[in-house]
Image 1: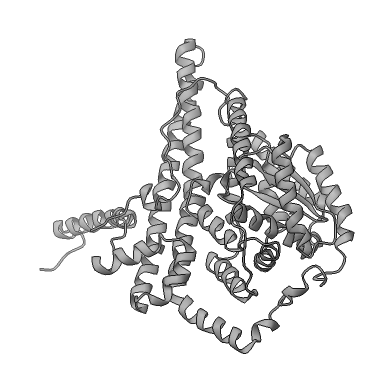
Image 2: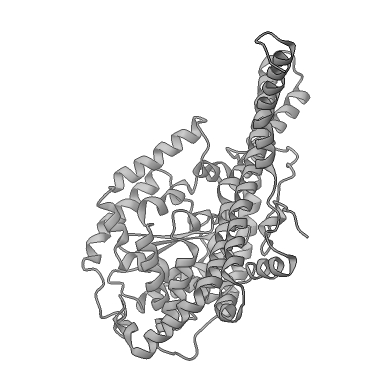
Length: 489
């Protein structure tokens, strides 16, 4: 049958094609929203997925005995990428829905403002406020928690795949003595060797950075508990004494729940209350302190300040603060400011601006392991703490640990490799009674801070007494699938 230009058949076909073309984007979108199914038989997928939930130290021990082939690992890697994309899309969709609901409520509030009675107005205020909280959480999950969780899984998959060969290489280097020639291999000379000359010239820059951060309100208040300060300072000074530090170590404890520590040039070390709460034993805390001291001994802040002066760093922090206070676009940094108040904003920025690059972070990992070991502590504490932070609720409070850092696999292998190269030492400390007593004191400080925080005005919750929204809780040790379910067998 021929189809003339104006024939009914041609007209009907054109309508049908138009409908099909209109349907294609919808079908593609539906397909994009479809969660990935397990790519392997149950007897392969479930054991491999279970391995990705195990601690790094266990995988270092058992990876050479595991029998997953290259095809199975490649399939799992592809699945993890797809799962991450699906979960991120899901929470971005939630973020968009919360934003639309809030904007509609705000429009209604503006339209009805003259006629609203106080109880109804307050109810609308509470709903808008809670939607802002849910937006912040959805954004944090989409931009940070989910990517971190899947990056951690992929690192463990890479460990299963590559560690057996890496281990053989390390054993060959130990047998041949070649490991002595590695960078910073002169561990028996710690304290005598000089890594980078000129540490003392950094003191003035560090003092100026501290002065300006205090002056501009970018530091949280200090933690003022004599027992906690004495314990942490004694531990920090012990690690410093067994490091390559050439300047006095000046420790400040900050009463902030962010899980973070950072060092400014010249030996100025800041540790936040949240970090003390998060560490589980003394070796973990010693490992974090040693890592931050390594940033000072490597003069990483000085090297980065060649590109950005203290003044420009503070200026950038002030710019971000201005965005928050004038209601500009939300970012990961604004989440912190809204969640915890204006305090701590500079600390979120400090890692990006003052000390983080792939080269410097890997160098600090290596030196930090050496200093921890030299001070008599179990150097595995850093791996255990890192693992804990990548698989717990710390995706919010500890986000700065995972921003712009090197790949997880590179950091874990670098740390494990250095641990294997260190001379054997007996009696390495993992925990102490002093640490436990510090924790007991800290619990009192935290309880007081939480009580005071309830009554403080917050940028995120200016309306007091509203019922809290039902938020998703990502608890320690839970897989990310708990908050983003995927098909299973």
